[in-house]
Length: 190
Image 1 (cartoon, one colour):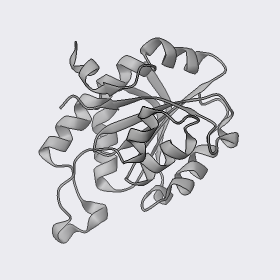
Image 2 (image 1 turned 30 degrees about the vertical axis):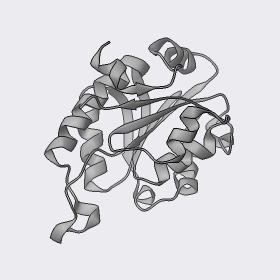
Image 3 (image 1 turned 45 degrees about the horizontal axis):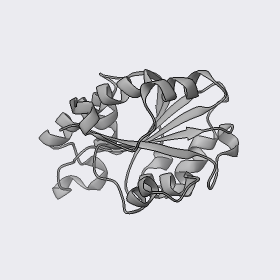
């Protein structure tokens, strides 16, 4: 078993299935909770940097996602420092063709994150969102089309540096409740 194998849950979502989704009619959506951050302290919540362990988590998550997805067309990133740092470190190990920092993703609920994803261009086949709990797990639960163990696990929340990988068979603008399938969780092996 490799370190990447130890960091996943779920039986589907191998590199082959993600590649099929990216190359075929389907799309892939990856919802990532930022890596472990320092306590707020005097900086305030939005300026919290990643902790040392968070930098290690984010750096390891990029290659783990690359092994499953190959690359990502677009990323939407919360402006919070811990989210932008997570993305920057993650992207060292995962090719991301374009990204944007979106102010509306900080303090966003699941429906606000969904609206941002629905605005993606039809040409985008794979997208990554780096955001916060509980919006990440709530959105994955909202979108998931099945009642299964993986969905039940995500409904309880996800830990830092965890990616929820969903297959999306509809155009982004039609993405809504129960229109995607949660295939796996990818966790940083650190």
